[in-house]
Amino acid sequence: MNKTSGGQAKLVVQSASKFYDTRSGPLHALDNYSMSVNDGEFVSVVGPSGCGKTTLLWSMAGLHSLSGGAVYLDGEAVTGPHPQIGMVFQDANLLPWRNLTKNIQFPFEIKRIQPDLARIEHLLERVGLQGFGNKFPRELSGGMQQRASIVRALSFNPSVLMMDEPFGALDAFTREEMNLLVEEIWLETRKTIVFITHNIAEAVFLSDRVHVMSARPGSLASVFEITYPRPRSLDLFATREMFDLVNEIKADIQRKPGPRVVDPLPPGQTKTPAVG
Ligand SMILES: Nc1ncnc2c1ncn2[C@@H]1O[C@H](COP(=O)(O)OP(=O)(O)OP(=O)(O)O)[C@@H](O)[C@H]1O
Ligand SMILES: [Mg+2]
Image (spheres, rainbow, N blue to C red):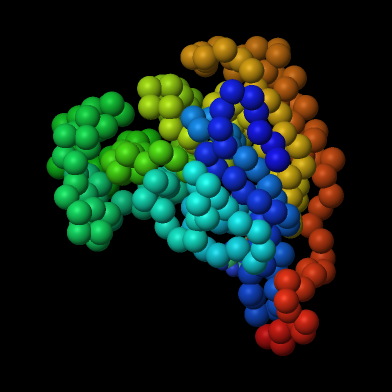
């Protein structure tokens, strides 16, 4: 298992495999994927589109079941949505008929628990959304909406934050601002963060470690340790060192084999389901 020195494993993915049932048979999305994330670490996963990154993240968050293997958080198997895991998705997923404050409070309402209003207020202020609580999503920019979804994810004070391509829809300038914000929040809170992105430079800028996933079925292709000192400045993006590292990771992704045409049967299944 990939355990770096100095920390203790917070999250462990052990030989995770996932097959989806589709009308044309089982689709092998994730293959024997193992990773270990230490408490307070920032780990990114990069890989080509459709390789299984979201599948991995959903498995880690207990949002769907695995076909094989297991995920552990603090040594306990993750078998469903977990209160210690906050999620940020590619789309902010704000309800258009609720203002910002009511959107952030919505998960608390569903779970019938009292929101920590002081914490929410502090987080809104932290991401520069103070005074915007009564605005509706349509009145906010994409970057503001994503900042709100980060507040929503952190409002429970989870110990792990999982982010799935959170800034994919943002322009380059806003994206850089969001990268700085995420690093600042991480340095302040020392949450354990698992971050999915297509953007290799973003992954390098933010992470302690970058996992490269092969083309589907996603398996661990390589791991890059990123040792630039913190806090990192946006100037890092313009350095030769970073340029070379990003190209090295890109070349590594391109070297990996393409998708398999035929999916093997999932464990325990002996007959291919009827096509149609
Ligand atoms: N619910 C599902 N049912 C069937 N197939 C699925 C399902 N979700 C994902 N897949 C398939 O599994 C594979 C991996 O999908 P996944 O969304 O994990 O990839 P990804 O790496 O996150 O891609 P992207 O970078 O484009 O977001 C793809 O071939 C996708 O079509
Ligand atoms: Mg995805």
